[in-house]
Image 1 (cartoon, rainbow, N blue to C red):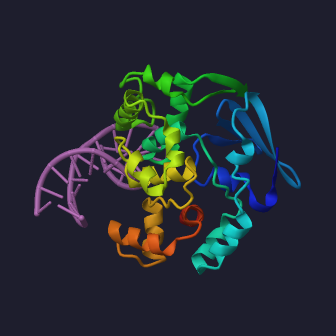
Image 2 (image 1 turned 90 degrees about the vertical axis):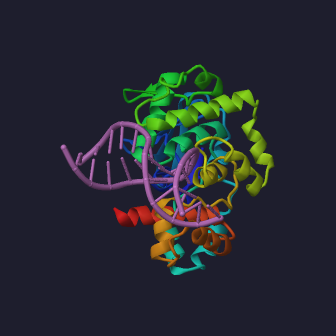
Length: 276
DNA sequence: ACTCAGGTATTAC
DNA sequence: GTAATACCTGAG
């Protein structure tokens, strides 16, 4: 599969904080998606996506958000204000990936009060400890993210892998609830944003921010706008919003209307790069 | 040894 | 209803 460079770059997409299983190896990006180990290789005119090992069981065009109109998204956001204009320019290669619901829910539960290197560490450890082996590349073994059934067999203490900390309790309870209540997470696709958020927050360890991330990155609710510590900084320092949860929410709901989730991602990436 | 990054659940107003 | 506080650990 080919990805045009016009609205995609591997660095912007894989390092903007939305995913935890892609890493740079030599000049390429290597990542586990579903049952496949993928390589994204930069060519002169485009990026080439290929399967290195395992089986491709997701629609790559969908995964890479090919149906979204990035020209329209960027034009709309650029015209909104000077910060969005700069942010879109800086993160012009970002695609919002459409990722697997269960993996995303567990990964973002782990993300709570945690930093990206440690989140990656925990997700990797869960995969290599409890997920199925896919294949190796450049001397490193890659594993699937564990299924619900695989995590169900793991006890509370075993779940406490590197980077997990006390969040093993939340992951454990979530797995337990999914099984006990016989929940099909895919039902959230059929819910609207408010229903989906309310539902996701019934899981222990899922609050407003984690719910918004899962809605945005897995359930295609592109109006979700996760407010984390970086976004708060943007809202405070650039948009001069008072430091209270209510004030942030009120502003975000009224200001970031169309393409809100995309706006959040450009701004988040922009703020993180500027703070380096 | 010490500091820092990080949302949620809980507790206290 | 909203605001303070504890939670946990790898990296530097």
